[in-house]
Structures are given as structure tokens and as C-alpha cells.
Amino acid sequence: MSQDMTVIAENLVWGVRRRVIVDNVSLTVRQGETLGLIGPNGSGKSSLLRLLAGLKRPQSGRVEINGRDIAGIPRRILAQQLAFVQQNAATDTNVSVRDVVRLGRTPHRSALSGWSGADEAAVAKALERVDMADRRGQPWQTLSGGERQRVHIARALAQSPRVMFLDEPTNHLDIHHQIEILRMVRDLDLTSIVALHDMNLAAMFCDRIVVLRAGAIVACGTPREVLTAPLLRDVFRVDAAVAAVAGTDRPHIRFQPG
Ligand SMILES: Nc1ncnc2c1ncn2[C@@H]1O[C@H](COP(=O)(O)OP(=O)(O)OP(=O)(O)O)[C@@H](O)[C@H]1O
Image (tube, rainbow, N blue to C red; front, side, top):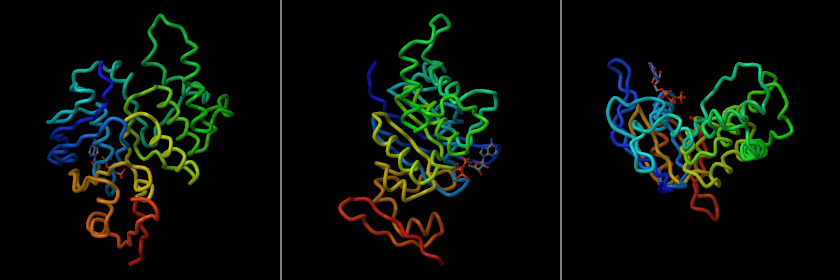
């Protein structure tokens, strides 16, 4: 199998009754790239992520990963390649942190194989990466919101995916962990698509940014190309001063009270 984990969406359309929620979206996410998805509340970021990950079927259009239409890939095979970190995902059974992260190994195990050294190593490394190794025995229900979020990210990492989808992964996280998680996502050797509200974080960590409004792409490019004062006014209805961060080609946004 080729190792090229390019994600290609062609003319995706999805809606509910007469309302179009994802409106003819086409995009390409290159192997190894970190793509940011930004847009106002309700602009369709989560819906688009779910279509791209094969968790929802488009009404028309298609998604191709590694050159294959994902509609034709069995769920288990897809889960060996894609991981999804949901917004406010719930885990409501009586389990420990380690148990939650172990679930990430499920797609790689067969009914006959026992828990292997490789499984154990993947879980240990994932817990380490999100700074939760010393909490592995703690009951899930007792974790704080940010700790739960980090454990869900660890579960996705334990899945050893080639493509990772993250829906507002920095929600609930303190600033240190916001930066650490996004730095890790950027530096991992995988293709990632991240819905984010914080545009300065998107500017810092994404290779390219797609801007959604009412389900349609209104801009796509590098943070410098996309995050301009006119776009922020037009799409997000805020006044902002955008400056280049010294020594980089990345913008920094300073929002201005009206
Ligand atoms: N199953 C559904 N039935 C009805 N409406 C839906 C459904 N799923 C999504 N929507 C609507 O589609 C729109 C887009 O939702 P989505 O969650 O994709 O937006 P979002 O950009 O991720 O929003 P946010 O920034 O608030 O998380 C919203 O107005 C939502 O209410």
C-alpha cells in the first residue's frame, strides 16, 4: 500500500431537510500537513470533519484517502488509519485513564491476539505525550475537563493513525497544554485536520487554513494569506490589527474592541 495519506474531498454536500450545512466543499490535505479549519459557530466545521473522517455519509461528493474512496473502505480498516478526537466526547463507563487509552488499540487487534508488547508501548507513549502517564490508574470520572480532553487525545494517538481529525482539541486546556498539544500535532508525522476557534493558535501551528462560512469555503491558504483584517471583519465580524511575528512568516492578530 502506498504511504501517501493525502485527503481529498470533492464537492461534498450534506444537510438536514432543506438546509444545506456543508455546501459543495472541495479540498486537498497533503501528506504530513496540518490543516486548520476555522469559521464562526455553526459554519459547519464539525460536520465537515465528520464527513472527511467517514463518520457521516455525504449526500453527494466523495472523500478519498490514500487514493481510495472512503465509502468503500471497511470501518475497521479505516479505524487503523484514521483517528477522530471529538468535541466533548463522553466516556461514561467506570474505567481508568489507562483503559480509555487502551481502547485506541482496538482496530489493530484481532479476536485471537492477546494484548501485545506493542499495544502496551503505544499506550504508554500516548499517555506520556499528553502528560498523563502518572495518572494512568485514576478513575475517568474524577478527571478535570482538560485532563479528559488530553486522555481522549492519547486514545487517538494510541490508535497510531496516519490521519488525525481533531474537533476543537484545545477546548478546556490551559495555555501550556493548548500549545503543547498543537505543537505535538504539528510535529507528528501524520496528516492532521484541526477545527479551531483560536485564530492565533491556528496562525502559529497550521501549515494552511480553510475558512468556512455557512458551510462553504470562503478562503484557503497559508495563515498569512488567509488571516487578514478584511477577512476577519467580513467572516467573523471583528475588527483586528494583523501584524507579522518577527522573524517568521506567521501573522499575529490583535482584536480591537469596537
Ligand atoms: N443532525 C443535525 N440536524 C440538524 N441540524 C444540524 C445537525 N448537525 C448539524 N446541524 C446544524 O448545522 C450547523 C453546523 O453545525 P456544526 O456543528 O458543523 O458547526 P461548527 O462550525 O462545528 O460549530 P461550532 O463552532 O459552534 O462548534 C449548525 O447550525 C447545527 O445546528
